[in-house]
Image 1 (cartoon, one colour):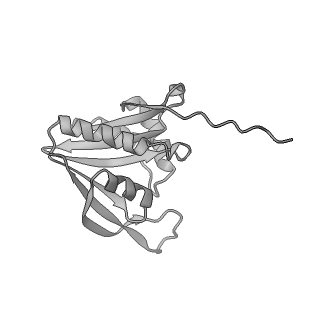
Image 2 (cartoon, helix red, strand yellow):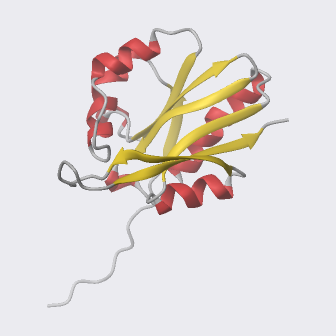
Image 3 (cartoon, one colour):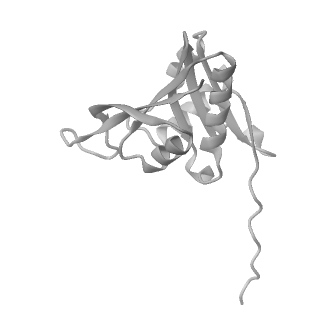
Length: 168
């Protein structure tokens, strides 16, 4: 018996300021994609710093499940820096990376920042595509910076690309 096709309901999300209560869930999301994930204690320590701020993505109608994505950033003088960003695998390809980066860009713009910097693994093509669409350009390179996920000790590391976007 063949079942009729029922299209999946489009997911909707909201972007909200990050709070210390999110730290354990942020650490769990960070573990999905980073060779050296941050702990909830590291997230708490960063959030306790005045220039650090962040945003979380929450699925509409399922906010109790916790964040499905986040961006953590820092503002200093007239510059901003993306410290880390992650979107849960099950929630990718829904524009969350763009929405989170947009929230960070708006916050930095309101703080009168002149430029925003970030570092990204040169092998992370989805992230590179997003950052380039957002107007970032490569301004530096750190060879051998990132451990490759699943790589054994002594195997090659990938470079970090330093990227910049002017805000003014």
